[in-house]
Image 1 (cartoon, helix red, strand yellow):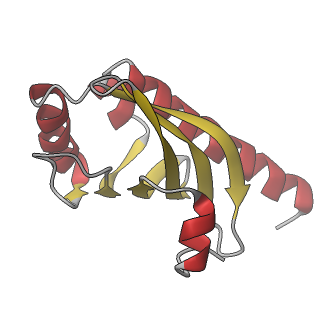
Image 2 (cartoon, rainbow, N blue to C red):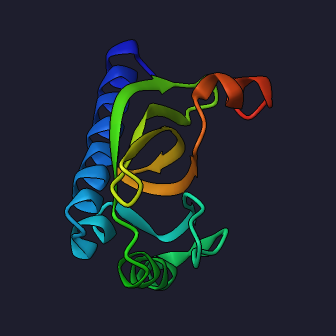
Length: 137
């Protein structure tokens, strides 16, 4: 892949992930689903009543109902995107936790396939910790 094509793909993937954050922060389920691959594998932030993993759009609907029904009022803000050697995208930022009035570190690792998020894993930890754990290259 040419360098300009790789750069364009990375930018497109960033746009897709940013769009997912914006839709999530507005609790726009349809806006999230249009950015997720139909066979999405999603490992969200761990909150009470939230399972470890969800699969497919049906799983996202179950997760979304748990988030909104559990009054989990939080938002995700991205500060940095980094393309990893294996093509996954590492996002570093913060999670604003309205219920406790605080901010926590956020890291997400994404696989984007043809403009759709295929795999997403979220962590309440800075990317430096993920690096030490060997989860990123």
